[in-house]
Image (cartoon, rainbow, N blue to C red):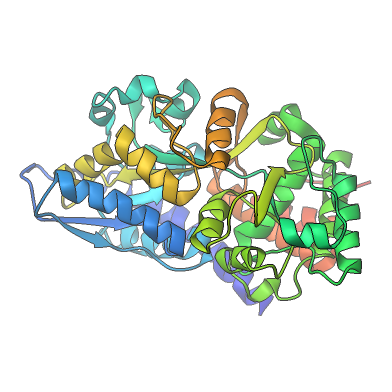
Length: 431
């Protein structure tokens, strides 16, 4: 079953590449720009907090564009992988949605390079958006000085959440700045000894395990190592990656036995209700914890994943307009709406992330989001491997395969073999 599933995922990755190539130059923007009555948006936001955040985007758009029928074509499951299947099929059929969700960096670049998305630079001239977004984030959605996507918010991936009551029950000291991997592993062992499920994990969504590993990896190699790794100047079969795999393997030994049957939001709800103690996940978890009624500071706390203080490993939610959108005017109007200060504030309040705009007054947001917004402005921001930002989407799939292979075997050779098979890299066996 695992082989079949992996083959299907690999076929999807190859199929998407084929689709992108086949569609290059295959469609042009409609010549007419008259307003229509429809707008179709594809995303993968379907959990409670995600749906609430998406509703904000739709409501604000409808308010500014009355009479437009917004079609919510969100796809359930897989942390976005199922949506990618649907999107690839539609691109191949020449039937793209008007707007779809992606990420900056390598993810959006595959669409830009193949001419599948429209130049939306004009949107950046509205509401002072160009100067409100950092140069790094602007470049991450740009090519040749033109912008091709508008981002709604930045999630911090390297966050470790914990249930305060369970931590106290096990006699674990509340984690604070400077928390180390060794202390984390010792605390997981103490929780297990106290009869508490130590680690929440939504293993049904591949990105959840991938995030746990990339957080652990970042804690070992630091920002310099991350930049070297993502620019092919640090070996994936080297001693630092092996160290991170070793720590990751130990963490998995404390994971919820039910992890394989849980989506990320279900695992987070278990943390909220006191059924497991820790979860290393991007701060979509924050929106879900609050949606579940958990109170920050009373029911749950948070700290940077061990070894990652002062770093902001991010996944950024971004929307693009199809080059041959059926409703280009409404599509651009939607991107203009999600880029405004009021919409970014209201959206991120629900989502758990923070605005991309530096000029948004975040003083009305809860404490965690205020601290995260400050960190996004002042800490070193790094793009994610697990979400196809720092490296190509093809490598992202290889990364997922490698993490899954290691999770099954706890064998570093299996990790490197899977990575090599998926990416055609020449990696010698680890020494």
